[in-house]
Length: 291
Ligand SMILES: Nc1ncnc2c1ncn2[C@@H]1O[C@H](COP(=O)(O)OP(=O)(O)OP(=O)(O)O)[C@@H](O)[C@H]1O
Ligand SMILES: [Mg+2]
Image (cartoon, rainbow, N blue to C red; front, side, top):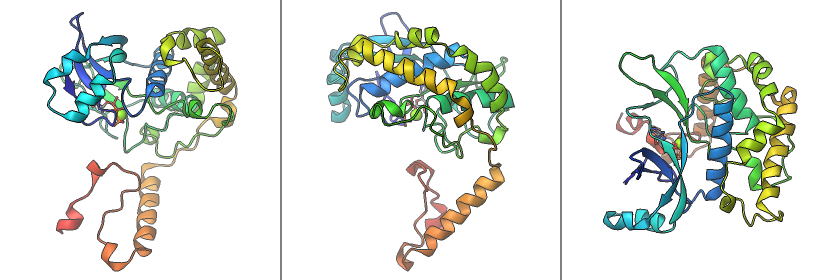
């Protein structure tokens, strides 16, 4: 097993007894089991809406595998994750999507935005796309694949506090620059989100990951809450449908304005520290320190 240190939850690349290679997300991670529930529900929803999403499997993990792991924090994570965990088929040689890396047609971009707005996914931005390109080389054309829906379904962190027609902040969506045709996507996808389809998807979540949810008397009740919320939200798409995406130029100008405002309010000794605006530290522009 190889820990993937780029992932915030430290997923691991694991070879399983069926000889498959999977990116495994562990129940013992700081993100907790709700991230795994979101991963299943949103990923399987995406698949049923015709978007590309790698196969998911439930992986029984024996922490004895971790005996050779040199890092204490990874050891701890593995020991806290005995039993059932979530594996995603590894796309061999896939590369992380970055804006302009691939031609994405407006309908496909619209469908991805539509899915993210439906499921309140806050983690598909220009700073962290959670999209992969695969295959990245060879004869077959490169395609867009969706991964990492652990941060979606934000409503399940406070059941009842979010209205199903709540607006979605799409300004920094990773595909906003491709002219997403969200109206065409809505016309095509909304009718596919039926009660039956949502029941099927919610039914894929292991019982143990839904047990003991405060405010619910059974795992079955929690499943129904996912179905009810997503159905109501799909029916209310007119209220949250993202339209009028800012162009890349407009986004860059807004970023520059915010950076200038931040810098203006800083004392002189802080003026040379890069302003990240929520970007991950890996994207720091060190030339500002050197130059
Ligand atoms: N199925 C896959 N095939 C190939 N590479 C993958 C796959 N899933 C994830 N990766 C790689 O591992 C990285 C981390 O995965 P992922 O984003 O799912 O983890 P995470 O812990 O939720 O990450 P973060 O919190 O940083 O977003 C991805 O950015 C990607 O580079
Ligand atoms: Mg990620």
